[in-house]
Length: 622
Image (cartoon, rainbow, N blue to C red; front, side, top):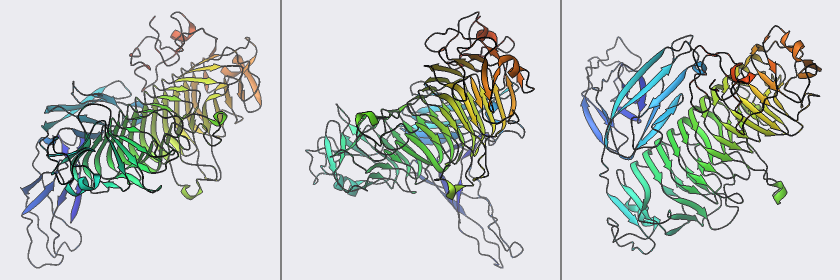
């Protein structure tokens, strides 16, 4: 019987997994005599194997169902070969503690590497430098108490033999040194094995008309030499894939390559991702359909420092279609995708970190492409534990919640649960929370909008029998330019929304209707709100004018603060700097109050424990 096991260290403090598979002989059911498991074969994702003695495992006729064997692997330091990706996931919290109000800080102790410190429900890091490392996870709980967990890993030097590929090579060579490279990907496919690496010469262009398969363990596909990334140029059928991984692929690194096609409007996929512990980094994606398609549901996918520079006829579909578990998307740059979202998670994705990316999804109808309009940059549908932090999104927005409208009826049971959207800069597109989203935190974001709302919440939908619940919108700054727009609109009923410490700067918006006011709530009451407090609404309105739309009524600040769910909201139009930071001494600088989980501001500066907080995304020093 085969058992998938996580490698658990230090009293199950947190999971550090590399896809270990323990193979155990099946026990005969109903046998008269006990049967003992003598050993267990462990297959590590660095391509090595090890046979370990097993503990006594006995089955008798008194236990006729199931396999009661138990294999205990001796605790040891996890060892991998550089470059090696480690994927980590925080353990479940004690009952009654909300993940939305808890801070997760990962320290990979790699001073030479990028992103040695990250925050999120999960994270990943690739180690290039051999050595011993201690990974730490620090929790900050809602009551500000802390706990730190740790585990050790060892990274050993890369000893894999290389296969060298160059356009002036010879397929009669073995390709085992850079002076005698092979010439074709077909020959490379024949030579590639577990525990090897295929290196393409920089500056070369390799035409490709069939899929290259990486169904191996501990393999790198990369580059050698000097110059620009080597180019893989697709000349095959339109529905092909350039590089394919399947469920047997383990600890694969794809790096320093450019994926392109020989014509505009190409629809081939660059990379089809599956398997375990997959890394794609420092690659450039040009004329492709999807850059990365993860519908193979990988476990552990790190996508870091990649780029898609073309505005027209670059990526036609998605930069990344997300499925699977333990995905980390770091520091990627996308200039545009011309038919779909930049990132979309659909049909089940669990534990995702999306951080430090710069994504654009442009509306190019005016440039002649009638179908290139600004879809989303980051869209999390049908998933759980998604952390979206420190990104820049341009023209395309951020969304959380399952697919709706007429397209989602085949997935009415879909839900999106436990999503944090923090410290992002969203330029000219809203954050949208769709019905079916539950347990969502929106905090410390800078929302810059021309002529429309900054946050949209889709309330209860009777066709799907689902709504929005447990939503926190705290310490965000919204800057609306032009005569139209608002901070937020709630379309229909919702449950348990907390709205606190937000700052709106809308100097040219004179409140008049549901689309032009500080805040718009379509419901006739505030029954869907847990609390509304210490927000600062800045619009072009006098003291007695209406500023908030509730149902069909435009309420003044006095009427608004008289409602039982509202406490000490303020109307004050404040002059800020270009990043929305209010000056010291302004009302917004000290109007906020403490909210659990918002321990820092958008720049990482601490929020005070006792002194008043600032409204908005930046804590102002008094």
